[in-house]
Amino acid sequence: MKFARIVVVVSLTTVVCLSSILNAWTSPVNPPPLPLPNSITALAAINRARIAIRVARQKYQDAVAAARRQEVARLKIAEKHVMQRGNLKDAVLIQKWIAAVQPQIAHGLKFRIYATKNWQTTISLRKGESVTISASGRWSTWGKHLRYACGPDGLNDPVNHIFHGYLEGKIGNGKPFKIGDYAHLRASQDGRLKMQMYNYTGNLANDSGFLTVEVSR
Image (cartoon, rainbow, N blue to C red; front, side, top):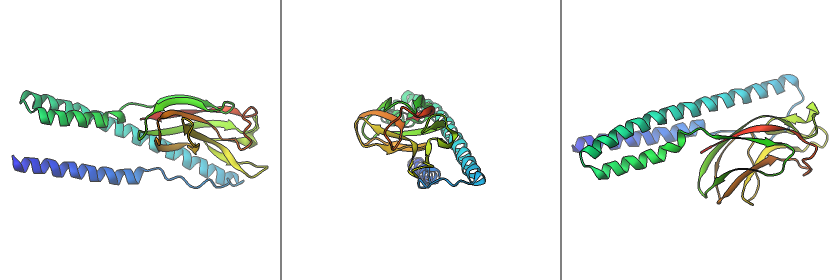
């Protein structure tokens, strides 16, 4: 019996260590907001990489959700067995484990964030709560001019050479922060998560387009 408990502890420790390593490998590493080059070939390379990264992230999230669903199903079977044996202490621990991994199963909520609108409300967050945000689509910092069109990561204004047009967010009345096409966020305070296009002029009326944003707990 003691040997079985030792094996379980070692196995859980191994899972936690592997999970930490996997998190380090899959953490998003975005380049700094550099001005985009004018070369069509270079722009195509950057765009292809962003698309490939977005697809890879989605596949990873789907794989995690599938693994967690299997884990919860097996944990519920284990919970039933320990309850039949009258081991309430172990049943409570299993229930806590299920509650901890359950949020990774649910798919995120999707929102449209329009370029012409100021801070648009999405979900409510509690301090310390973590969410993953992914965005896709195209919008423009000036009407429908292709020269000013960009994705969630923004662009370097071709006239004033100021980086803007990216998706930004804030919690409640907190300080705004860049989201771009992907971000993992831990809430610094209670409040509603809001988003908008960052336009250095502060005038969104001349912008156009929208992004599709998914927020996953």
